[in-house]
Length: 211
Image (cartoon, rainbow, N blue to C red; front, top):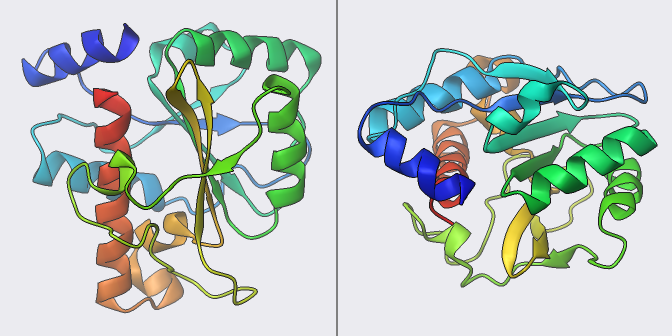
């Protein structure tokens, strides 16, 4: 129900959509890629009918404002730890209609997998097939996620957790979308990589708000 109400408000220009960056514990750099989300939000605003502010919000999991955001984003290179209280809050958030995009910035993979399993121990991360709507909501990605940066030479993977057949966690692994959203001169990415990252980001936002 959360998504349908928010989408209606957005369509009628009564609601400004923004992304909430999750400030998590454990020592990981949750604040990495500072220009990424402002750039993505700008392109969402320019290319769609969704109104967005110039920057994301930041929210801690225990902050009651968490439930105001349909789209949470987390990234980093280091350790992630959710407390027992945070696990319970996040489970309630997801089962109430919330969505998390976790974007591995090369380094948080093992801790993220460990911590997300605490929230949904009965629902393991599964790879989404290439025909999943998240790859086709606005732009076509017939082969799944774009590969923005090389790390281990592995293919990019879009992994998800479902609750009642709804995708509640989307985990982009070996992809580095956030780096691709950053100002192009930060990583010296070629224009086509920056564009691929932005288009995939818009797909994720649109999917979140329509499913």
